[in-house]
Image 1 (cartoon, rainbow, N blue to C red):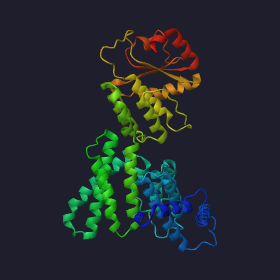
Image 2 (cartoon, rainbow, N blue to C red; image 1 turned 180 degrees about the vertical axis):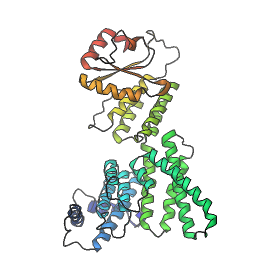
Image 3 (cartoon, rainbow, N blue to C red; image 1 turned 90 degrees about the vertical axis):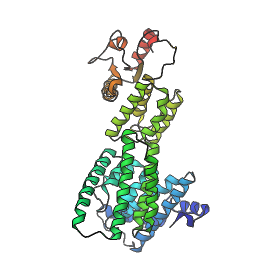
Image 4 (cartoon, rainbow, N blue to C red; image 1 turned 90 degrees about the horizontal axis):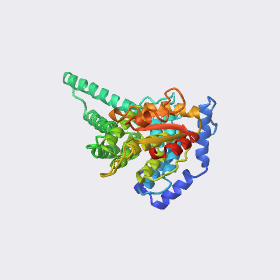
Length: 410
């Protein structure tokens, strides 16, 4: 069903009925049936075979609602897509999905677009995989862009070999030619997307995004309506990935740093690409926005929500700030940043992790040191006399003493 078939009031009514705070009786019945089968128990006796198509139609309707609300800047679009993802996940069980529709991949794509990457990743990592899942789309939704680029290169290698052998066989049918051309264009667009995420090459990025969007419209005329829906969601996911990537958000920090700072940021982004950390979470984007304002702020989020990434970006930004012409560095020392931790044990752990990250920024690497033994540097040692940017990791008590006696350095 197309979103143009509804008015905004009808969209709101559909949302309240299907994606409200409580599950409707029909959706609750599906969840109960899904849970029993998942636990290797007999399904509900009252489950009817036609309920699969009914719940699937509701999921597609919720996707229409979510995309409509997203396009018009309404508040509930994420909730609508999340409920659609839940329905698709529950319907994707092989015991229910007799026609082997690509529901698992579609559910993962909807979760990712709704802003629930953990749910998406958990679904993609599930041991039960649909036979028709595309490896490239799976790696895209996982945010595993290095693997996606590797698959992209492998595809073109095999495609070249196939075309070289094509002269020896009968020509493909027109449907096969069109299908192969669509796949080629999707792979090209994903390759350009990977190029941007890895190297920051944005020359053809907008064209690639538009191509994915146009291809999703073209697939409306195909025989598989769910492949069209998947392509539409994937084109939206790519758009969100570009907007929410570390690279896109860090660009706003570059204006205030020196040439060495820009090189350091670029090296940092490429290192993050390699370890599959190219995407910024919502809390991280908010942190970067505060870094752009160059004001003091506190980032209070749960453990594992990406606060360390913001700290790393803040350190690089502060270490390589542009020095205004005519300003004097009277002490003739490189920038020093103090990283405070609550205990000595944590200081050692943070020193090890930060040392690997900030010590691998090429010629613009940053020294990282603690003051608690091992690679300990005292207050009259290299972190003062060295001309390299330095991060001091210490407890609050040590920081107070250092600021009291060596205040001008900080």
